[in-house]
Image 1 (tube, rainbow, N blue to C red):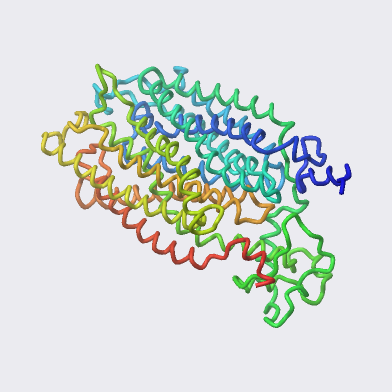
Image 2: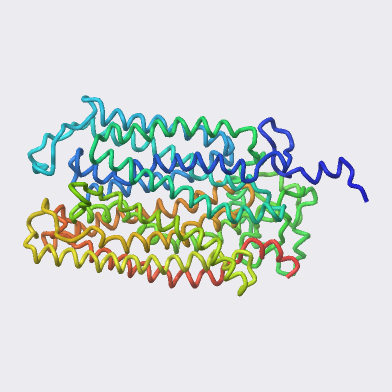
Length: 580
């Protein structure tokens, strides 16, 4: 039987999405890998800028700004924590008001402003700290930067953090929006999208660590901040060029945040919820209109939230904050169900925070020479994390997934929660290795008589640090990519940006916890022993103790995570709860 032109047109239409003019979109002319490639490309530029700032920040703080090691590490953690927590605000703005596309554009402008201000702070004599070679002079003999110079620098940093807050929750969700989950072919591509997204970001991270960090350490900080600023300008132009090919998700008239909040308020206001004998479908309002995702019935978790559902007086639905639809309640249950998984991943965020702080400071004390006189910038060692990711992602996607799929029958090979758990175990091993390597470095420094010579190079190759970086990279393939997919898929369809921001808030909270631990441990150990765990003289410090502490905390967290992950009810099962 011949297919009519109307049927063909309807079959090619992507529901729930429009083009840049607000018209229905065609699957064949919009979205897919073509549009996603634009977004991956510009996000590579964003990560290039972020890592150009973050990866070497502790060197700038302990160098030109002359901050103590512990204070500098805490400041880096606080800034990174803010940068990873602000996506919660960015997601709220995107999902409630601006939409993802406009929020991304606004974040580009903030990025250009922030990186431009950083360039000025390292270039103009009135904003740049006084020149001083800390390799040949003690920091006490160097002229201190003025208060205005310090304030301007940190203000520039936090403008860039605001840019991260707008970009991060929207860019990846916007990229995933280019694949229709209702189309089998595009749905499969979306699963691979998260792997290749992270693959592309790691390429840009490697470039920034190899090139920009070398410029910052050997040429000038002004040029090292200026190059990222220019790259962000180019990225904004590229993003705009793809505007006609993108699929734009329709926004709800009502803020999804307010919809979720109403459930908790209404549940608290109402007394006892509907009895267990009440027919679930009778709880649905008679004026209910189907949404993009199929209606899911009442799941068995968090039954107390069903107090928010109107069972008798349907007119009360019109009274805000007093009653909700079952659909709203199930959305609230989804969000609440994510909390245990979120909380049991926080120590992993603390481990991530060490990669750009103490790992880098360790490397700065070791032999870094290659050939005749070339010195590897210590922050460049972070390249091994991303090189590992570049090597492991294709293996995971092309080898491990098909192999495990043959055993489990799952299209993804293993579940997302299993993937995250494996990565968390590897992160525990990475901290154990880091502690052992640091203990060896301290032993070598002690044997060489360098305990009171912090400026001297410890006769131990920096390549000893490579195993801990490689293990961190393997862990990221499992944990980071897994968390991204988990929080994108397990939130209500209208809150995809929120899902990505929840993932990022794990890293943000982890940085804040790291800063708190560093400050607290430094006060306690400095008071008891004179030399704290994070002494400016790393040869008298005890980073190995700190790494052992993180390994222990992470192992405990992994055990708790396994308990919660076993009882987690995934979104697909919630949707099918009516028929179970």
